[in-house]
Image 1 (spheres, rainbow, N blue to C red):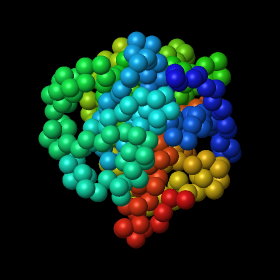
Image 2 (image 1 turned 90 degrees about the vertical axis):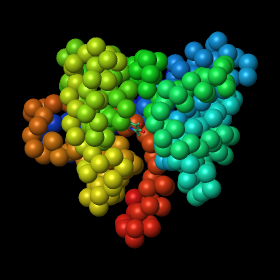
Image 3 (image 1 turned 180 degrees about the vertical axis):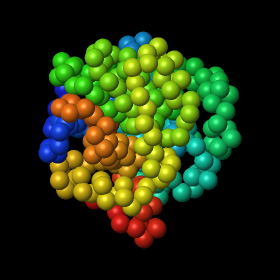
Length: 300
Ligand SMILES: Cc1ncc(COP(=O)(O)O)c(C=O)c1O
């Protein structure tokens, strides 16, 4: 079964400031395959299924809390595709049941294969041996970023997104911002809120788009995956005020930075700013388990 096209609502975040802020709720696509993950997989899966309708299988890579692993497992389940997840960290072999993301993936039928961090780092070798082992499988890279994924992000843009002056997204591997930059209108400014310290991102995004119409702003708040108390306060307050859940690794940090920038008058008066809610809410449970162990406030 192919993935269907879905229309996503845009909602206003009323701030009482000199600009207008909106969110496109890609997180509402589906409770399990949400946000940018859906669109990054959209053409990958649908094109593959056209060519391989019988006995389809998908292989991908990720860390212990990966939104991408969760999404691929859910796509596998709903589209009847066998899925194999190559998971970073051999030590998880015996304790994956305690990890909500991996337990969710396994429940969806994903077979989990754990590899050492060294093996995981050498993607070329790993990919080559997987290709030999499963010649018919669809191999999707970590984070789901490839050319089809960038083209799939086009589906996040439509007539309703054309009038905004700024398009904002969180940036991990760069595939989502690449799609937005590639397919947005000429007058639009694209801002990527970088949650990883990766100095090669700009080059990677350029290679995917051949465009330079984007800016990257550091929004890592101390590093990828690090959660500060101020991030938790922001996310909980945002949910109370606007009824929109955010997670602490991507969308929470992006929205916190966007609002900081609005307060610093970074955006010209009357700007219309659209932030893409790229989902990933499954990660809250895992983040709360870690916060609980550290005796800290939880994300509500
Ligand atoms: C919820 C969420 N938002 C944003 C991103 C960033 O997307 P990309 O890796 O395409 O830059 C990710 C990626 O992994 C994600 O899980």
